[in-house]
Length: 254
Image 1 (cartoon, helix red, strand yellow):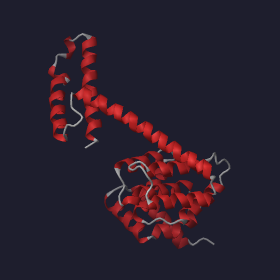
Image 2: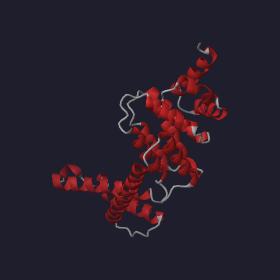
Image 3: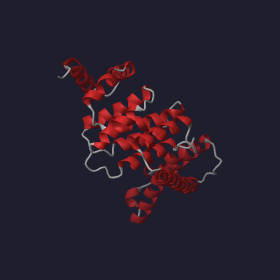
């Protein structure tokens, strides 16, 4: 028999979150999350919500050092947007991100995740793909797993009964791709310094001054664009765009 009181509360919370995305409604949503109302009734209403539990686990790994960095937050946001969902469903996944922020890790989330995955007809190695993402977000800002992250990943491997050798391969794949990414980033930054004519040891103030000077010098409004040869006009516009892109990239490093 359906508990209509709990069912109404559950859907009222979803309506509030879907209808409003800021101000009083967000404060109310966070208050409800903190008080555990969603946690109390969610499992009964959303037993097969694979994405829900997955977003929670990613958030637990991200906040394991006490805060969620921009890189970790962007990773979770990008991951949420990979799901084929309507706006309401996507917003509900963001609620799971908030849930993970305000609640402590509980191994039961992995049990529920496995239960929902077991009901899928085509799993497509989903368990190892999830492991990859858990390890990846855990190593975004560090070289090694901390104890909290190691516990979550260990629980995941145990509950899903994953092969140890395959798990090692997944870990090595993450490390390899991370090193490749770092190498590409270094090359990218070198180009940015070159475009702006700056030394790698420059300060944030140096960057801002140089950017102001270059954008003023290359701004299209300083030239009579209509009388320029097309190739000169294109070079000027391309240079102006590169200056802005290089500045945006470098300012993230400070």
